[in-house]
Image 1 (spheres, rainbow, N blue to C red):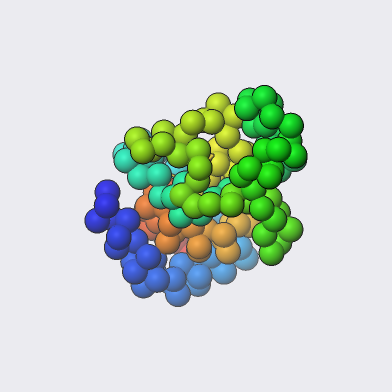
Image 2 (tube, rainbow, N blue to C red):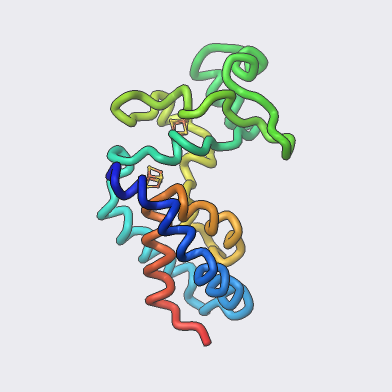
Length: 165
Ligand code: SF4
Ligand code: SF4
């Protein structure tokens, strides 16, 4: 996995133009069954990929924390939300709460998440490859393929599966 992660930014960069053209066409004319296709590609990829061998999302790009995330996680720690915010979060340039530090403070050396059951919604949904109307998050996906080997493979499989003129 280390080698895959080391090569991923370069491979994603090489595919960037091709991926961008693909998503531009996909947005204009998405197949009717795109949600079904994405579900299939997502499930097939995550049967092969073990996130515990990777954790690159937790190491390199943190989630944003919604108010509901902050309330749920601070309750788990039996802290007041404000104390949790002061301990772990900062406000970024988009005015969102994000982690003060990367890798994520809740990531263990064994790649397990110490707050897994109450983790942020963004962590649960990353890399968003099974979400409905996937074509609507193409800009985010273009970035995620450089971080997440599973997202990279899913986009490659999409291009094979969905032939656009
Ligand atoms: S979601 Fe992607 S980046 Fe995160 S651990 Fe799994 S394979 Fe790695
Ligand atoms: S909260 Fe858990 S799943 Fe989310 S980035 Fe941190 S370690 Fe990863």
